Image (cartoon, rainbow, N blue to C red; front, side):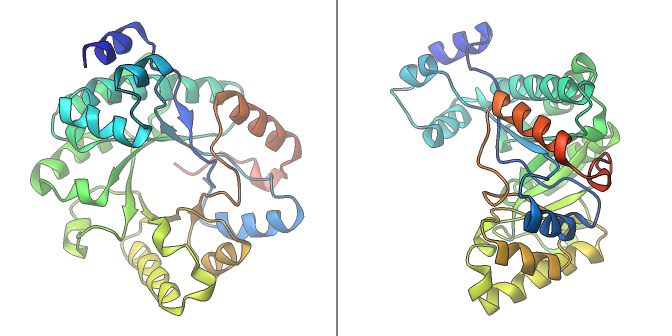
Length: 283
């Protein structure tokens, strides 16, 4: 992995690429989005999920591994900690630039299990915020449910320290792990991101509707926002609104966008959005 480390040091991994823009507004997000989609699908406030995309040089060095294989390789070698720090810095800098351009946008960055295994994560987040000037409330750290349960005591301590910085915390792929109500109460969580497997085909699945209802109500009982991943059909959006799910993202709103496309999306949204949708997201 010497080539990957060299590329990281030279800044050759490329810029972070946001995933599909997401609804990132107060509690009426999906209801308002449903109304907007009936008239104009692009009138959606964009929040972004930071993902790394490796340059061709790095992929060649990784024996032309796919992105899905590249991340596990970084995990195995421990380089994910350095790459994760770089992603935090780049994502915060980009989000700060967008906010300075008057786009009320927040950004979410996935954190790996290896990053969460060390106190370095806290310093990395603090440094990224300090260097970029980004408001802490504009950054959300996402951790998968499975990662949360690896070491409950240490994870709860580190996430409490992250939360003290003013950063938001979301549980990604929620519903696919083994967390319990008791465990959830121990973590300073702001949002539950319901795994897309529960959303897929929701309009034709009564059991799925029941599960969504249960997950949304769980979030409400703990005063935690609920966020649906992988919304692709208007019928899915309608059902999620009926269940009072707070926010969502998926191909129904936009495909994954690079920085340039995201800026075009934001500019188009700013030009066409109604006043009710131009308020900054809740912290």
